[in-house]
Amino acid sequence: MTVLYGIDIGGTSVKTAFIGDDGAILHRAEFPTRPETGIEDFLDRLHATYVQEANKAGLSLDDVVGVGVGVPAFFDAVRGMVVEAVNLGWKMVPLPQLIEARFHRPVAVENDANLAALGECWIGAGRGKSHLLCVTVGTGIGGGIVLDGEIYRGKNGMAGEIGHLTVQRHGGMLCNCGRTGCLETVASATAIIRNARQRLSHANGDVQIHGASDVFRLAEQGVAEAREVVAEAADWLGYGLALAATALNPDCIVIGGGVSKAQELFLRPVREAFERYSLERIHEAQVIPAELGNDAGVVGAARLIQQRVARRR
Ligand SMILES: [Zn+2]
Image (cartoon, rainbow, N blue to C red; front, side, top):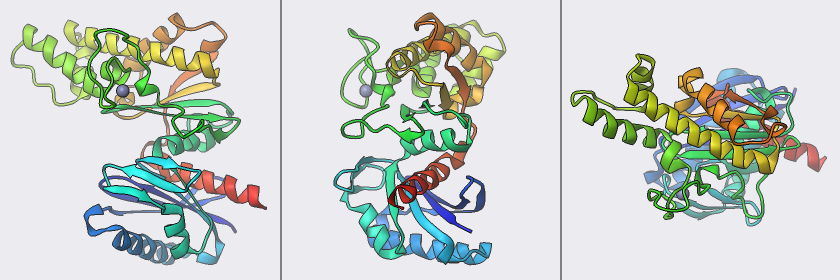
C-alpha cells in the first residue's frame, strides 16, 4: 500500500490527512497553527501530529511516499521559499527543505488556491477533466488553474489571480493589492456585504447584514435591493470568468468559497453573465460548485506530491 500525506496550513488551523493513491481520505486531523510560537515549534508539532495520527489510524509511516503542503502565501517554486505568509508572519522560509529534514520524505509545497484547484480536478467537481479554472469567492477572490491535469503556475506563480483582473479601468474601488477596479472589489463576499449595507440602509434602516449569506437570504425572500446586489456581483463575476476563460478555454470552472454556498441563487446569474460575455465554444465550460470544501487543500497537496514522486521514478 502507498499512502500520501497532505498538509494544509491555514492562519488559525492546520489540516492534515493520510490519503490513498486514489484520493480517498484515510484519516484526518487538525491542530491550531499558533504561528506566534515560532517556526521550529510549529515544525515539531507538525511532525508529532504526523507520527501520532499514523498510529491512531493504524498506518505505517513506511508506506508514506511523500508529503504535500499547502500554504496561504506566495511560494517561490524555483528557490523553494515561502516568500511571505502574512497570516503566519513568515518571510523567506525554505519550507520544503525544513519539512524534508523532519519527515525524511519527498516534499512538495504550493500555494493553497492552486492546490484547491488541483484537488477539485483530481477527485472533486472537476474529476475526469483536464483543464480547470477554480475560483474561490470569499473575503477576496482567489484562483487556481489546472492545465493537462497539472497546476499551471506561470512564470513566477502568479497565474490564476483572477481576483485582480482589472474590470473597472476608471473610478474603481481600492483593492488590497494597492490598485483599483479589481474583480474582487466588485464580486467578492466583501463587495456583496458592502453594497447591501448601502442600499438596504436607504430602503430599510433596521436590516442587519453580517455576512453575504444574509444578503442571499434577503434576495431569496424577494427583497428588491438584495436581489440587485446579488445580480450585480454575479454579473461582474461572470464577466471576470469570461475574460479568464477566453484565455484558457477550460473544461469547467469550479466555484468555491463562502459565496458558492448560495448555490443556484448565485451560480445561475453567474452562468448567464459568463455566457453573455464569452464566445460560444468558450462557454461550453460548465460553471459548477466546488465539492471538496475544507478537504480541497489536503487532497490537492496529496495529488501534487503524488505527481512529483511519479515523475522522479
Ligand atoms: Zn487587486
